[in-house]
Length: 66
Image 1 (cartoon, one colour):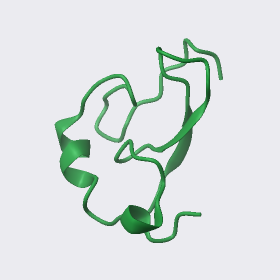
Image 2: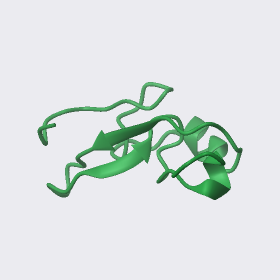
Image 3: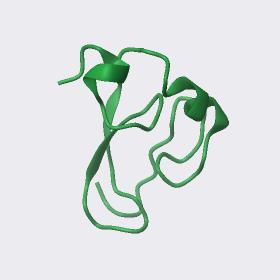
């Protein structure tokens, strides 16, 4: 994935670059993880985030995350 690639959250916002009010509210609600690799505009390092809530997949939020 190149630095120019855009990954959208489930609500249509650019993951890790735009703020999504729906994701912000959803991040505390347990749900199944939808992991995706993201390269934010401020770094060349690849990050794994949940496409649905933009958080790092975690057992607390996603239950089944590894």
